[in-house]
Image 1: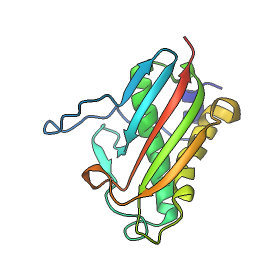
Image 2: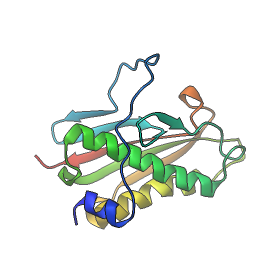
Image 3: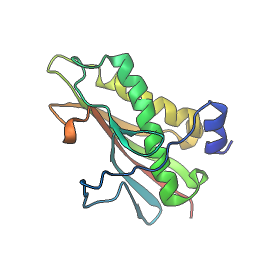
Length: 160
C-alpha cells in the first residue's frame, strides 16, 4: 500500500511543511538529497499550519514516557511532511536506513528508547516491515536548541 494511503487509513494527515519564524534563519535544509539518499535534519514537531510546536521541556520533569511516545509519533508526521515536500511522493522511499532520537532528559530519566518507539512504530505502520525497517539510536541529552524536548533525525533510501 502507498504510504499516503496508509496514513489516511490510520486516520492521520500530514501537516504543512515547516515554516520558520521570520526571525529564525537556519544555514541548513530540513531535508537534503544526495544521490539516492535523503538526509533528514533534526526535527521537532510542527502544527498543521507548519509553525513550530516544540514541544518544550524535559522528560522526567515536564513529560512522561507515554507523552513522549505520542510526541515522537507527531514528530514523525512533521518529518514525513518535510520529506514529501522535498521528494514529491513518499512512495519514492525504498528504505529507512537510520533514525536518531535526541531526548532532553533529567539525569534519572532512562526511557528514551520508549519515547523514540513512537517514531519507529509510526514509520513501520506507514511503510511496512520491509521499507520501514531501520536502525535507531535514542539518547538522553541535557538540552536541545530553543528548549525543544525532542528532536529526531533520519536517513532514507530513495528510488530514482
